[in-house]
Length: 231
Image (cartoon, rainbow, N blue to C red; front, side):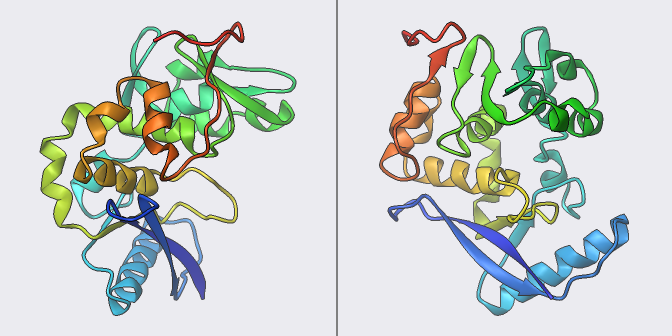
């Protein structure tokens, strides 16, 4: 047995995303077949709790939209054009003894995620991207900003997914990771449903301010030179 989260948009509650932990029969192994079996187990177990229909957001999703919403597939605007979201996230990490490793912007997502420097450079202390320095707190702030920024241009098309009550990512283990693409999708739909999406995506400071009352505590965003950004 294992437990994995289902992320539910909750635009009318104090928190914009509800995380429901679901117990499922877990099939060990790293093959695509095993991962798809685990997705089915998770969705069937969630359905018994009343959480259905769900969309798996990962490269292992049976739904092409779920595959396209993967951070390995989505693109963000980087210094030299569009780059994979996963590469932007990994290449923006700043550690005690190195980083950001911006050369990861131009590699493939899997290689970027597995780069040894990300494990050998000491403690993670911040993110730097497009001339801005992002703090580690709120914990999911930088990832949420990147992710929702990547899907924001497609916000009207994505409205067709409003029939899903929640989102999953079979690759996400909350005991090992903090950021989750399925959670970011749920947050996107809560912001959209509550009419907060447009204002939140004006800039990173607006994003924090809009979500402050629901998700985050206020934390400063600074330029790389440690000076307050002027918007």
